Length: 164
Image 1 (cartoon, one colour):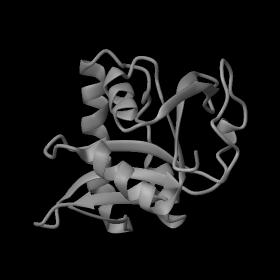
Image 2 (cartoon, helix red, strand yellow; image 1 turned 120 degrees about the vertical axis):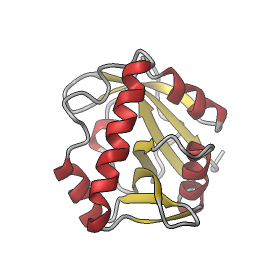
Image 3 (cartoon, helix red, strand yellow; image 1 turned 135 degrees about the vertical axis):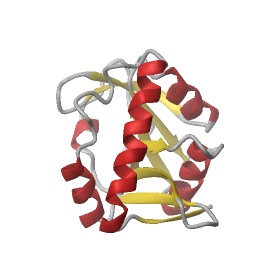
Image 4 (cartoon, helix red, strand yellow; image 1 turned 90 degrees about the vertical axis):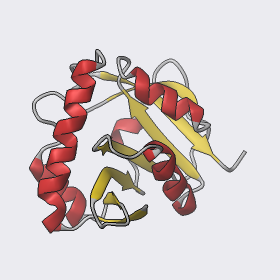
């Protein structure tokens, strides 16, 4: 599997992958994390323009997963409740990870790619997203507290660092 920056011509497939992921969330009792067709096409276009959007491509060049990796300060991570970050060093943030359900180990591949870029990685997920919580913890992330996303809803916040 190869991970590369997404291109504008990937948007249709990316939207299909996110639609599939929303369906899985509904089936696994996580109906509100990605409501209202989140992420929007405009957000994906912005991620591509800013070179935040990455895709996993198989040997047949078919897109199998997508995620955003943002190596900049995330304003939603500026305030944390019921805990604290492991450190205040520069970090990358993984957002909007989703797959088409055809490949195993997607989260592991994403994390491995991001760890090659940064020594500090943060990620968050909804309290109802048990699948993602399991994957995050299995990959060595430490639960740090609760952050609040743009619509003011809470998310469980995690961090992994190589710096300790």
